[in-house]
Image (tube, rainbow, N blue to C red; front, side, top):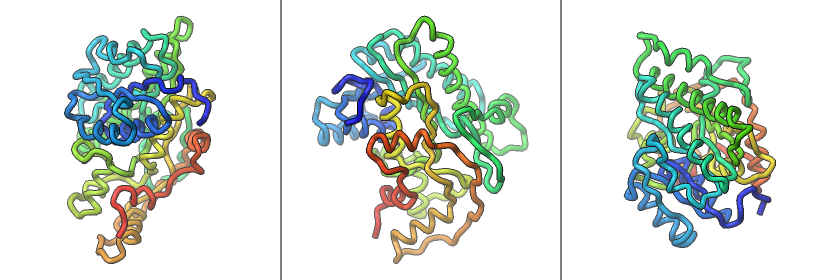
Length: 342
């Protein structure tokens, strides 16, 4: 096992534990020998996952913390008792187009988590799940775009304050979501800088996943995830995925493992870690469907454009290798984990 800043067998708090990224993060934390306390608005939302994890890791490894409102003052104070690490993965995903409904709650929720964690000196690491959208929006076919730890989506932030009337609802919602991720993450870095002299006791990292695809661990709560959209498209039920631009993908397990590294690895501190494996487009996805299920008929190719941006994902990849992976899992492997093979 790799050296860790967290005590062996200690407890990690994960917010929004029933989500796709959160559940894969929890799996990696449990596999590494830690305990997890996962938050959700109700115990029912985590019932299926708890049964899964009780069976695989033991009944004392995962516990549920019901937190109805992460925006309430001190909402996490009780859940943080006895915790050595925090992964704040819960997100505002209501597809709203008003800043007061998306951006402001995201910022306040993030700060609420950090302020609560700062009350507990035993907390050694806090990790925020940000998004690639906090840094940029994919622009397929446009060369010369680069992104690294210093890149911020200033365009989305500016547009969110005065959305062009000609944009449709989906475009407006994605701009506001992107702005919420940028402003929420930046608020976290500002909090760390402003409180450097007086604390807090923990180190901070952010993880920036791109489009996440891989195994769905909880049918009820993850049907509307990006993996859920892809599986629906595979089943011919939903073509919403066709509206997504060509961009980078990342495997769900890899995303969970990068969160684990951000929580535990001693030399990973104060970093923005891209979880972005490689560019893909819908035609690549369809090719994987056809290879996995050669007897089935799928739609003709529909998306030849490609994301030409160059993302510096070297630190995320280094975390994977430090934790025993050779590198990013392939697009085909990610899709196979989602839909199986013939």
